[in-house]
Image (cartoon, rainbow, N blue to C red; front, side, top):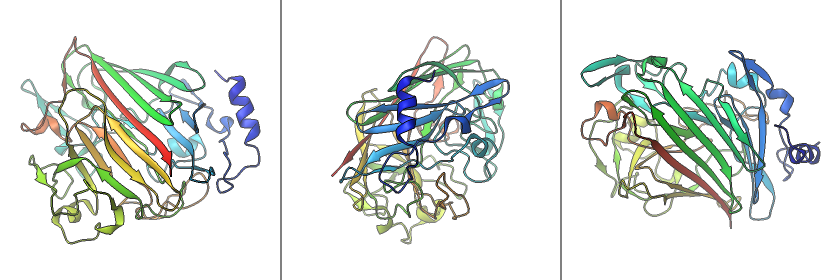
Length: 374
């Protein structure tokens, strides 16, 4: 599916580096391989002021180039420079990936559905994280179509994969718009009752991949409450009001301004690693729910979604030992993830909105990251 546009864009990028202010595309040959008998490739999209490269292994965004206030480009997506590092990584597994079929954590790797208990891989402190051992981030997605600004992925998850019930068919679109938006569109159906809560897990640094920390990034989240967690980051089932706490981002605050304050929830998460219960109705409408801005570069990113939850993670577990595609360490708190979702551990939390998916129903989910510079 290589287009003339892609070839020309690659030619223009020759000899550019990540700190030159110019776009430096990754080499498509470094992403060509076969996994479980399926071909893996790298695809290049462009629209507006954005250029993005994705691979169908885990439907990962591997680079996303955006201009700063002076028109200089930087890759704001944390990622690796070749497919081997994604498949055999010793650092961060979820860079740029879609995660699920149930994103976030499920307590003790178990849940009950219609009286039957399902047991899942416990791949995170005795809990199931982002779908388990395989998930949707370690499979090769089929590419249904691809053009200069959009790619459509499909896959079918078989009954029993990672312990989840039902055969689930998923279609997911990555689209760049003329308005500098990166939009993710999901739809899914099932042949039997199941649970489903998919999400996108890009790690962003609006100063550039590997360019220091995100502690000076200014964040706003439209939310009056979080779902507080215990020591293994499983929600307690309650809602905690954020007013007069370090979790109140209704007015803009630098991420590093209050992250080290004495608060039991900051201790539990080793910083910010929580789900914000968004101020919205569960009505399926896409609205703006968050904004993050880098004063240094002038780059900003709005988050728009139809989901009711937003997981904000500020890189508390990065330790500088993982190196990006440009050979720079991902520092402690060196990237931010803003994952639109329904609430974590919903199958085990009767007070949370359901994530059950029934035959005949269609799961839908929209997430848009809109970039700007000022």
